[in-house]
Length: 542
Figure 1 (cartoon, rainbow, N blue to C red):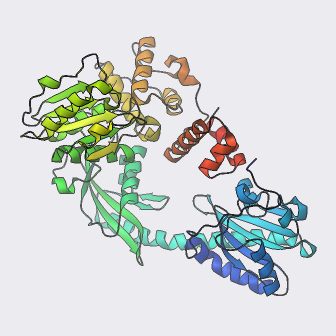
Figure 2: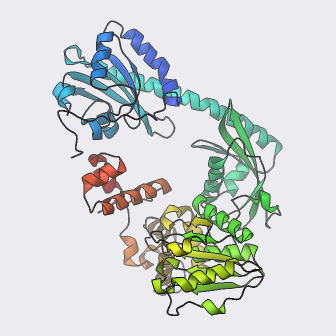
Figure 3: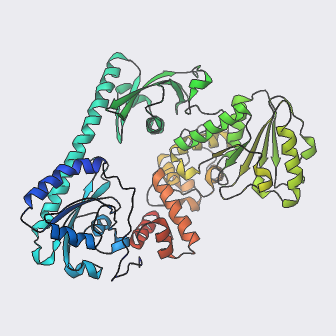
């Protein structure tokens, strides 16, 4: 099904494999020990990455080395199942467990002379597969103990990976303890997938707040000055954030964040406010949303023509209003509906005034006959003094007419709701207060669980309509799961992480582009067809 030729498989070569990375460094002493122990046996030990690409190979003789070279079992070549069929490397990756593939159990004819034992190597902290350790020989020399040796070697490499990570964690821990001893603030340390917090931070920071701090750690660079940032917390208070980067050698090991909490928004200069500052009138603290907000704010400050790109209902107009209110507070906010009944849309009514913001909504839906009029409008606006801020919103798949594209010099992508589920609870509260200002109750925990499992193809607009229907069902009191529309109760089995949601979307797009052809879609995604079927089942894609 993957298209592998049983007699002459095409094993691809990649020149971008990391032959000096952490996995190779930690596996090297284990491979040295294996090579020494197997000196008198015709067995080869090999290391691959998580894609089945060989990183290192240790042979016990020249004849054996030439045998492997003839079948391209060499560094850089991929033995994933999608390229080589059943084998000790690719099958161990697909199954996620040790395998022993003997002779004709191999899919390809040229591999049927070999016996291969493969064991996956997992990251000790995340449990993600980092690669495979493989022992191979000709079938006449095969022995079941090869599988045991491969598993022991994988375990030893995992221990070395843990020790390597522990050095970084110890460095971050030292800084965390030093900052905690001298500071009464909330202190949170981030080292890869590990997080440490003092008691103050544990009681103060919600999971959404913690996610934002972790995103700050991800964005750190060694050449960045350690300037204070400011962020708003879920409970409405503000925090002044000081970052203490932790460097091990020449690499960034992690960071320790010190948060001084105040009731009012701290006063920081614009240069030091950073991307964590939220916009007025909008809800959201997830990294993707804050990135879009920061880009919109910067464009508003410079009066730079901006394209806001995103799916319907994601909040593009709300983001433009928030940036306008934050930067151009005294100016007028003018909305022009490009797909509305009035055409040409308000072209003769726009007079430049100080602080003016003009939003061309749904510019990608503008009828072709009105392009000259809108082009002339944009030319006049962008040449006027004082210069207004011009924003255009377009759909995720929409394209700006070529005749108008040259007017815009900046763009920002507004993420769909499924990619910012950390904001769900805050959005629910804000939308309910907006539709029923006097209502104090929100949603019960079971209702929030149902909402969190929804894919939200209509984004925030769909969430608003769902909550409106639930409030009609229960005009007073806490919204329960049974009050939600039936469409919300046919949901995924679990809440997807942002990365999983991105993967699901990529699979859906590939299937749509391939007209439902699973083989073509799997090839476009760079995965085997069996992996595609498994992921479709996991994400409930039908």
